[in-house]
Length: 120
Image (cartoon, rainbow, N blue to C red):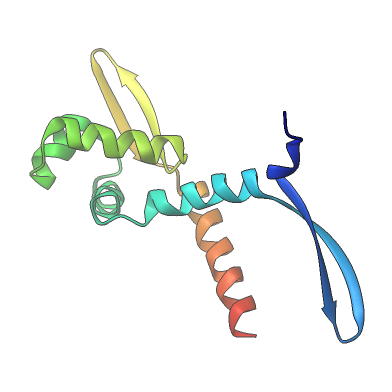
């Protein structure tokens, strides 16, 4: 069939009469966008704020405090877990959620760098 060119592409940029080539891996960009989208949702931001306040909660505590259905809270927690914004630990039948503060700091730093570049 086709080659694996859909994941990366060579782009030539002409800046101040200089030509440079960069490889862009579109699969990595897609994954990065999914991580940013994971945090760019009102309910997921509410979950993060709640975990900042309480530091360690079960899914039951989360959905009760946010007044959403258990299945809705679980779906959004799964998205946050896949993006590595929350950590989980099991205690008996309960899964406890806490923030992955290192990951949140990494994303915050990355976004600041993107914004700084954009405004420069």
